[in-house]
Every structure is written in structure tokens, then in C-alpha cells.
Amino acid sequence: MSIKYTPQNGSILICDYDGIVPEMVKRRPVVVIASVSPRLCMVVPLSTTPPNAPKPWVVQIKLDEPLSPPYLNTTCWAKCDMVSSVAFDRLNLFRGGKDAGKRIYLERNVSSATLAAIRSGVWQAISYTR
Image (cartoon, rainbow, N blue to C red; front, top):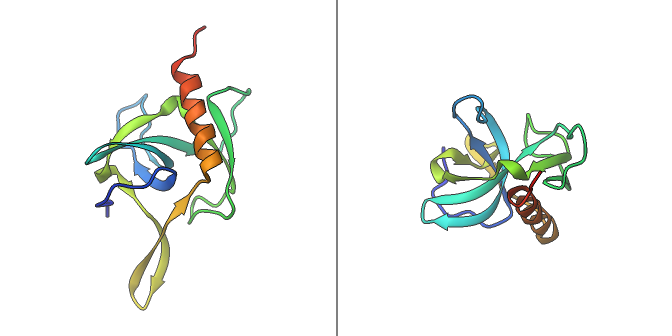
């Protein structure tokens, strides 16, 4: 079920990218970097695969604890060159299991320093010239 509220900057959510190849076409953790409008926010996807070579727009992140399955790595990379505006309908909280038949949702956030590093990575990506 999608979120029904404006997420805080730095929130880690699941985004359902059901786009068209070569766009991203799977569910992936994302970090919210800005609210755009009442139903849109800007997000940067996270990957557990390190880049082949260091790039200024790929930011390594160390999480205090794993996200929920199947996203159990505590080290991941923010792919800041893939920043996008998405509708809240694409965004979900992580599920943490059930308690007495009721779903438990997990709210996760990156630190303000990590959010600043991700925003810097986005700037590096959009200002990159060959």
C-alpha cells in the first residue's frame, strides 16, 4: 500500500519503478531528498552493487542496521545520477512483520550528513561534463 503523506527528507522508502527498459524497472530502496509538490517527491535509488570505478555521483552509505528482507546489506550506494521525481503512489514503507495480525511498518532515515552527501552527489551528476 502506497504512502498517503509527504515523507520527510532523508526517509528511506521502497519505490516501485515499473518503467520501460532502459529505465529502472524494479522495486528498489530510495532516499527522499526533497518534496516537490503535494503528491511528488525527489528520490535517489540505492543499490547494493558497488560501482566499477569511483564516481562523484555514487555515494557510499553505511546503515546502522539492515532494512527489511530482501534488502539486508548495511552497505549500499546512492545512485545520484538516477535522481527522479516520483508520485507517492510508487512509494511504500518497509514491512517489519506482523503483530497480532496487524502489519508492522518500519520508518528508516539517513543522517543529515548522509543526506547532504547524497544531495552533493546529485549536484555532481547534473553538472558533470565530459
